Image 1 (cartoon, rainbow, N blue to C red):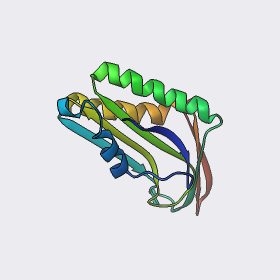
Image 2: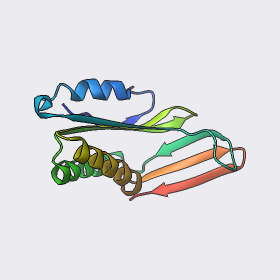
Image 3: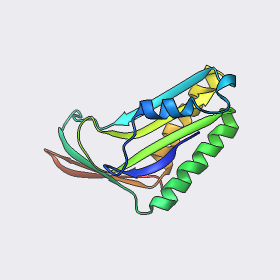
Image 4: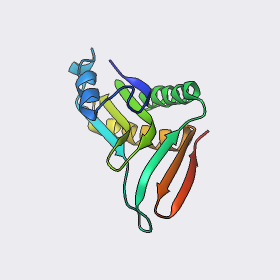
Length: 146
């Protein structure tokens, strides 16, 4: 019952609650003992600037989604978890907007937590995203993955 999507902001809307509700419909829920979730969202202030908006894009949505799926499959095997749902948004965002949702269903808390951490870190560092932070200090571009 896993959801794995790369979504243009405002085309489809998901909350962390939607992903949790969906993953509980897994045929393996009776074997499960843990669900962990992560919601990454736009932070409005850093030490030296106030963010006006953030633009997140990827040059190749199909490749980015394929990379996310590969990360998920790797984590499922490595940590023996049952289901992993990921929704990553792209587009123009403001403080508090969700960017990245992950929910993992597993048998035990330890490996489920480790799988969550690995999926979050690998998607952040390995998938080809371009983040433009527009602030009172100008525009800062951050490239990730790829």
